[in-house]
Image (cartoon, rainbow, N blue to C red; front, side, top):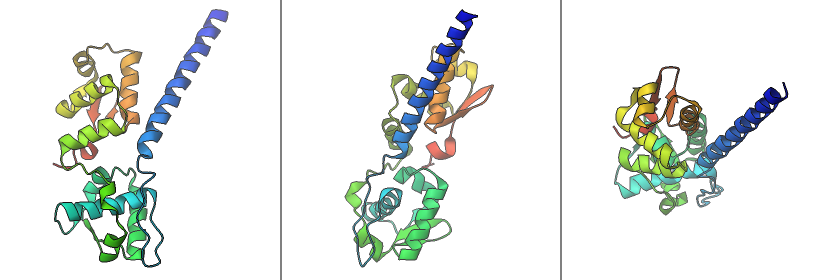
Length: 206
């Protein structure tokens, strides 16, 4: 019984360590825009964090690519701000402050928004290939995770055993940990039989 108890303790420690590591990785990806900021103009205080990142991103796209508006569905990819509610809250603030025109499917910066924006503060991926490189870097993926991401980016959806074979791995705890990492990074999903890349989020420029 003593051996069994020790084994369970070790397993719990390993599991706890993996959860802590995954949480740190996820936290890193979600705070990559935490230092974003805009100018304060006409009595409006500077935006910070996700709100600043979205305003700066939209302003940069319209300025650098000479477009009149930006599709809403591409904002998460352009800005790297996760969470629909976070983006929706930012839109509400922009509309209230008059810094952005928010339509059903598009957004556009106003003259006031242009004055506040710091467009050189954002690096905007403009196609799937550059977006994928951005994702791999900002998520802090290691070599094995990058290889798996690249595999799923090509295959889109695979049987778990086929994915493991393509990676030169067996269906075991190591492969399960890799699946969990990709899910934690919010780039892929899996069930008992298949693994897939999150197409809508990972291929925003189709």
